[in-house]
Length: 67
Image (cartoon, rainbow, N blue to C red):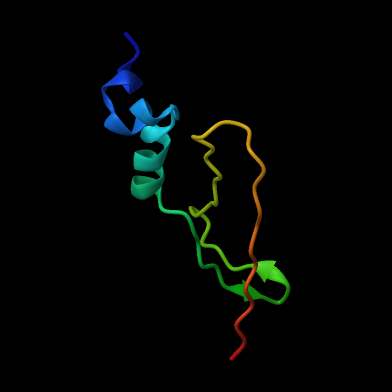
């Protein structure tokens, strides 16, 4: 038995309940400063994209807020 079978959400025909839970833990957005045209990250910081729900069409929203 797959571990995902334990989620009631999956009884609706979907099989992605675990993906929804992982997204809640990982968050779905990031706010990053840009200085002089480059990402303003500290040396130990990185941005990762995690895909937990299979290969579906995605969209990216970039919002620029200026001082």
